[in-house]
Amino acid sequence: MPTTDFGPDWQPYFEVTGLFPNLTKIIPRSFAGNVGVNRAGHPNATLFFWAFEKANGSLTNDCLGNDDPWIIWLNGGPGASSLLGLLTENGPLRVTKDYAVVKNNYSWHQLADTIWVDQPVGTGYATTDPNGYVPDEDQMGVDFVGFLSNLVKIFPCLDTRPLYLTGESYAGTQDHQPYITKTLFSTPNPPVRLKRFAIGDGTLGSRAVHVELPTLTTIETYPQLINYDPEVYEYFKTQEHLCGYDLNLTYPQNGHFPTLVEPSEQQVPSTSFTFQSRLKKNPQALLKAVWRWNQPESFSLNTRETEHREERRQQWKRGIANRPNGTLDPTYGCHLFEEMWDYAVNFSSPWAQVGAGGKDVYNIPDALDPEIPSDATTFLNDKTVKAAIHAPISKDWQEDTPYPFGGQFIDPSPEPMVFLSDLASEAREHAVGMIFYSGNDDSLIAHRGTEVIIQNITWGGVQGFTRKPSTPFTDDQGNFAGIIHQERGLKYVLFQNAGHLVPQSVPGVAFTFVRDFVLGFNNTGEVDNPTESAVGGEDPNLMADALPGNPAIYWASKAGEDIASTVAPSATRAAWDAFLATATAVLSADGPQSSGSTSGTNNAAVG
Image 1 (cartoon, rainbow, N blue to C red):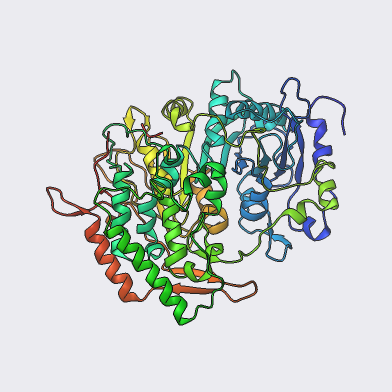
Image 2: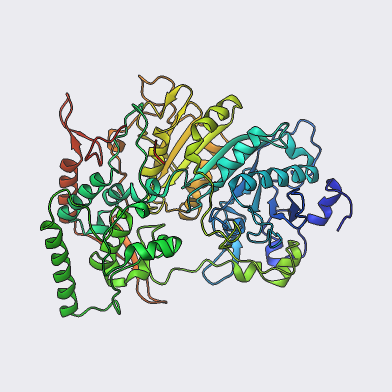
């Protein structure tokens, strides 16, 4: 290891050599190791990076005239290692269900030099001392800029080449990227030239906005969750209105939305289910494994068990029918997301048969129990691999660090929504593009919440988008891939058939998206004049609040079983479509129009 300050002479040290021969043949030249964040009093506060070249020498060649883009990828968590993304989503290597490591044909490094970074300090192979964890997102942003200032000393060309900051998730109450971007904008002579940032299924607002508010839209996307039952739909529609979640999105938006009360702050009567006490004790656990009333003992149900479940479902429906109109559920209050999944696990096929283990809040149509493994732990903790990537010898890699903010369970930082309008305005001033994207099958951080956030921010002198996103985009084979919309430097993309981890769900489509819309300048979906359609046209069938999901739900109740799928009869689906078209229609001067879940008129800031 060099003893000098960071500089190009460190490149040979960081170069990855000595990996398994079968891997050396399939991956490009790469560099990896720990780099300090320059925080006074914390010399062991480092971030870990693994950088892959697009072409041999592209990170280390002469800088003269080099304006090639480069990408940084960040996972969320908080405290999720970005090496997990490298090995299960968009990196050159992919961990298989048998724990083998193979080539990923859709790796983003084929488009630009790409660097996966473990952060904040202490996450993955990033290091820190016991008192060095970040206290909040502001310190995280300062640390990251400190890391970048050292990284560009090692690879000097990066300081002038356009940076594309990408990442996903952070299923908590914040998102890293807005804080990093804010720090870069406030840093005199920043160490890098940020060109765009792209946030996938990110938590930009409150938990109420991203988790609870979208519940009815999620049901409209996947009515299998309620067994295509109109009565249950109307129940959730009423609860949505009582909770103030039925926000009316207009284009452009007319006024800011009211601040939504966090469900955990509402006074809900105590019940035998003790839902509120469980939520306050362990909110993260309830997001990842929603508490249930009961769990079936096995998938094989006899006739009596099936009848008993239907009896309980009818009892539940009689209970809501006998409740006075305008009454909030005494058990769940405004925890509509949790109630929706509890209903599915108890009464809806195939979840009720598979059991709660088949519930995947990040990818609705995946009801597999157990899940197909994609565990990078064995590979990353192998002694040969650790030595090759210069990982800390004294630390074992884990995909999640439970407390990246020290002893605090919850990040104390304000949600990005608080400063997002200012950030969007600064981004325009700095000619930095913004991209928000969502997977249509993600129920935990559902796309409806992101759309609400966009309509609640002001940039370029206008609040929200001026036209509703409804322009289709396709993959390289011409297949429909989702919805794309662009206005005033902000892009929004909704991916069909994708869950929370878009590059894992639809790797080929994600690759095309990065090539054409993140790095590229494809103008499909762009609005130049609010009175005219977007480039590429606007499809009336995509105007609804919900993009229909996959009709099939995939399941397997035991390890080793073949994957099966459940698809409702065509008559059931046709009847549902007819019902929903009426239930989501609103009257206008031109007659009924489909408007998604618009059961109220809340239009009055979302927090």
